[in-house]
Length: 254
Image 1 (cartoon, rainbow, N blue to C red):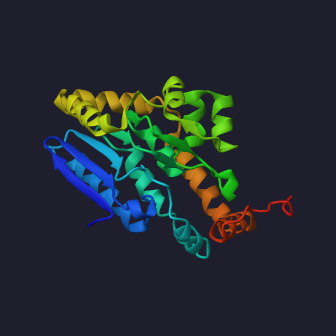
Image 2: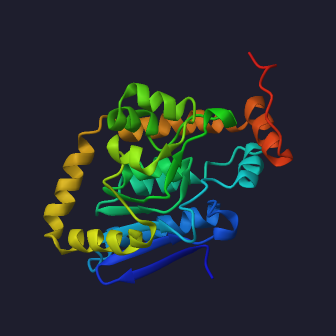
Image 3: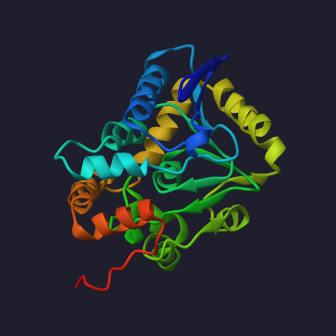
């Protein structure tokens, strides 16, 4: 079974992170599969909308930590970079259906979804600074706009978790439903989007996206810093502490 399941259900392409034994942690191959799916959504006239979710009881734990450690030793490009480009330029509407935890990029990618439905079990966590990293996916631009400066600072600086109901109250998700109702409800929303006049939907989405100043520039700036941080001593300490199941010690860093 593939680590990402891509299935077309009528005019909706469903994309499911399918690595539950690893908390749906994202690998290079998984990113590429999702990029291919986004390109298919853009090019295939029979597809009018996309739906993004996770298998099991978690949306995604974000990037695979072992992959992070391996990448920190090289100068290769960030695996998420083509994914973020494809996500942020997707021409057709995308519905996010969030079950359980959405960690790191698992949360930041949702800011690019047009509609986000959260199960009551959903939790949103962005622990970038605690890993010696910086936010990505344009989140340093989008989250202050979505939830306000102070709330965004708590989420991005402190990595404070956000439960589903609070995320709804803050305007980050559109609706909270019981866990068993998540996929049926998200599919119904995606079907509603798919039934609308397609060109009107694409143009409306483009207008909304164009109202976000210099989003591509911010994504690129974040990724440059993110790549530098991956090779930093702070990140090395954070990753090693994670592997050794201990609390990281940042006291020696200035």
